[in-house]
Length: 442
Image (tube, rainbow, N blue to C red; front, side, top):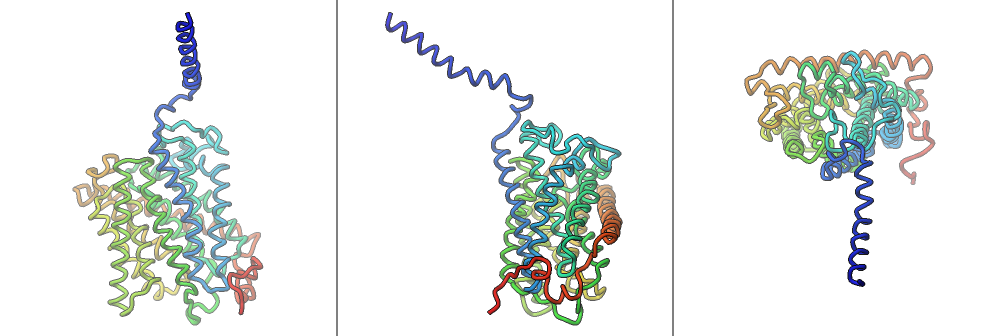
């Protein structure tokens, strides 16, 4: 009897242990079984890597300016985290990925991230929570806005800049993101390939930065007073972290741990390293000296160039893309900028705008379905027609960026001065605008 009772107690205990699992399984939202732990872990790490790129960009840019403008330059990158991050949560994500309206913009399905839960989304995030996808994409929106500051540093009013990136994210980034990356978007429907943001991120931010720089005018003494980077170690530190984060930036766009993720990761490495080397060679040939500032710029140019192609091309093609993009950006920054005399302060256009255009077009040349069956074969693989949607995507990004940036700046100028005063510029924006100094005076 005692043995029989013990057996019944053991059976009841086992049933009790299984009961919570049964109840939770019954209450589990539909589709949760599709979640993949490896994909979720990788995407969380990739999102963190992309987030870290924004403060790193602040250091990268901060080392390039005069010492009296260091903190203001870093602050412009950090400001994007708060401004664009909150915009994304309130309505930006919905405008980008909500239900399609005319192939141009998303609807209000997910305002305030309402309904963006822990279950996967069959269209965008098949093996990770929809909410995780939204946060990963948030990091892209943040750093894209921050890139613009590189063209207008050392003379833009901080208040005007904050309004600029808020309105720009809403009126330029969000529509482009929807048009290029959602199934209903008009650029997507044409068949344009943009794996991680050549048109959406780099062309748009670079072209808008140049547009804003032309509207603001050049810095005081530009062309007559040397604008020498005040802290090259800052540049290398920030640039190296941006470089590291770019692996999460590109490979994360596979939205999971997969063969496409590996391809994007490898292509990111190969392209940036080749671009770094090409810039070294060009500096040596043209100026007989190899600079740290120049070579890290070359590496970034290679990262920009491979971004739209990362998940669509073979490693050898990524190397070619890196080499071409580095050479074109080198000419744009060291020759064209001086000839045309525009003050693109920290070469946001020369690196991101020009590099993004190169990368988007070269994607149409080197893309192959052998790497990604969901992509397309490019010109080199017998599909010359792929160049048409690539060109359309580039032109759409350029035109939308120019027109909307001009409109936004015109509206802001009705309420705020776009540019700091001459006295503030002379004194330095750190003290004038923020009441702080990056360095102690001895």
